[in-house]
Length: 434
Ligand SMILES: N[C@@H](CCSC[C@H]1O[C@@H](n2cnc3c(=O)[nH]cnc32)[C@H](O)[C@@H]1O)C(=O)O
Ligand SMILES: [Zn+2]
Image 1 (cartoon, rainbow, N blue to C red):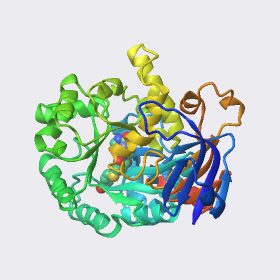
Image 2: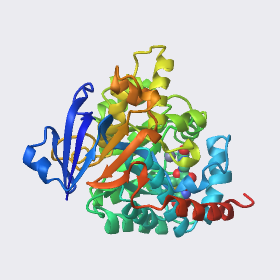
Image 3: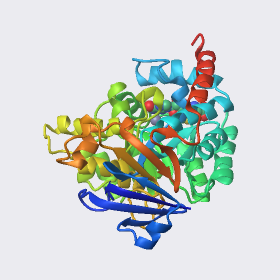
Image 4: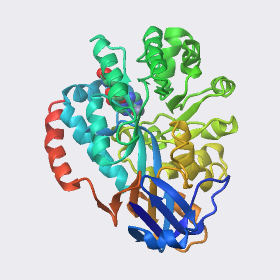
C-alpha cells in the first residue's frame, strides 16, 4: 500500500529551527519513503492520494507521560491536593476498575489522542494486558509500563504483571508497542523495591519511566525519610545508570540538575505543564534543563489531572510558563516547543530511530493540520501559528505506521459514540459513593 500526500506545508522537524517546505510526502507500507519531492512514477502509482492543500504536515505528536485509562475518571474529583486526590479519590476508584474498564478507558483516551494529533503515548498503569490490547485495537504507537508501588498487599502480582507486559507485548502490533519498567515514584518505591525493578529492566534491556519531584510534599517526604532530595535519592539507588523518563521534575535544585547533567542522562524529562498548573504543583525549570543539555519532551499526565489529552494545549502552556517564570518572552520559542512535542519526545522515549521527524526511512506517523480556519490565518509564521494558535480540533488527518486512523476528523478504526455510551455507564458505577 502506498499513500501520497500532495501540496502540503511540510515541517520535517529535522533542523535546529523549523523551516516549512512546500511539497509532497510518500508513505509506502509503514515507512515514509520520500519527503518534499516524490518521483513522478511513484506519484502516478500511489494507491491513495490525500490533497493537503492549505494543510501543515508534521510528525505525529509524542505524549511522554500518561495514565490513559484514567479518562474513565475524568472530572470525577477536582480541586484537591495531589496526595489527597490520589489516596482518597483515585486509588479507591481504581481499586474498583476491572480489566474491561481499563480497556475502555484506554480506548477512549486513544480516540481523543488520535483526534488531537497524538500518534505515540507513554503510559503508566495497571491491567496492562488491557492497555496493550487497546493500543493494538486503536492503531496507535505506545511505550507502556506497569506502574509499580510498594504496597502492603504484596509485590508478586505487580512483578508478574510487569514481566508479562515485557514477554507478551514488547514489539507487538508490528513494533508499535514498546515496554519500559515503571517504578511509580520516589515516595512510593523504597530502595530495595527500586533495585528489584532495575533488575527487571536490565533483564529486558529496557528503559524506565518514573514520577520525579512532582510536589513539594514529595520533596519533604524524601527529605524526612532519607535526608536527600528525590533526585539525590534516585542517584544513590542507581537509577541514572539507565535510560529513564522522568515525569514532572518540577522541584529540582541546581544541584539536582547538575546530577542529571553529569550523569549524561539517557532519556530525559517528560514535562506536564497543564497537570502541574491544575494541581498547583509549581513550574518545572525547563529553561534550566535545556541550558544543562537535558532532553525535554511534553506529556499530559492522566486525563484525571490534566483534564484533556490535547498536546496543543500543553505546547502553549509549556511556552507560556517558561516566558512568565523567566520574565522573558524569548524563552522557549515556538520552534523549541514544537520540537519538544515531536523529535525531543521521541528521544525521551528511546524511539528517535523510528519516529519524531519526517524523513525517508522513518515510520509513517504523520499528522495533517488544517490551517484554513480564521484563527490560523494569515500565514506570516506557520511555526508560531501551530505552536500558539492551533488546537487539537484543527487536526484533519492522523496516520500511524502508515495506517490512516483519522481522515477529515472521522476516526477509521474506533466507534467514538459507542465507546462514550459504554464509558458513561461504567464511570458511574466505579465512582459511586467515593
Ligand atoms: N496503583 C497501582 C500502581 C501505580 S499505576 C499509576 C498510578 O499513577 C497514579 N497517578 C495519576 N496521576 C498521577 C500524578 O499526577 N502523580 C502521581 N501519580 C499519579 C494513578 O492514580 C495510578 O494509580 C498499584 O496499586 O499497583
Ligand atoms: Zn503521572
